[in-house]
Length: 107
Image 1: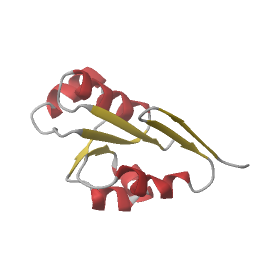
Image 2 (image 1 turned 135 degrees about the vertical axis):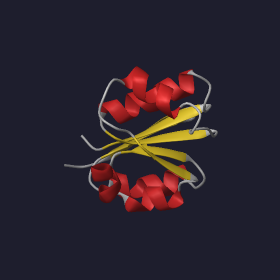
Image 3 (image 1 turned 30 degrees about the horizontal axis):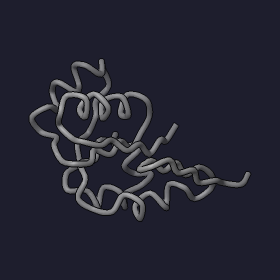
Image 4 (image 1 turned 90 degrees about the horizontal axis):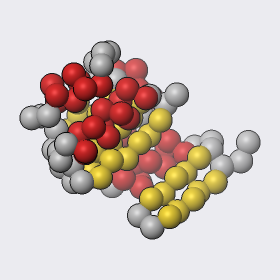
């Protein structure tokens, strides 16, 4: 399988072998990272570059986002994980806790 990169304005989608390893370079430093313990083990370099790391527990996205509302802020909120983590990041941005969301899917 070969990878590809697609850009549209400020959006960048990178897909293929090694794409996760490129995420740290694309994201820079200082973001708020939402993740799970399993996903964090898959990409520890993303946690190392984050200003803060927040574990997303199992459960409903609205409840998780409400719990994290006062803990998470910053210009960029990065989701490292699956659908629940990505949806929680989007909910926090929609609630005004960040101005942009980025996703590094693991599923």
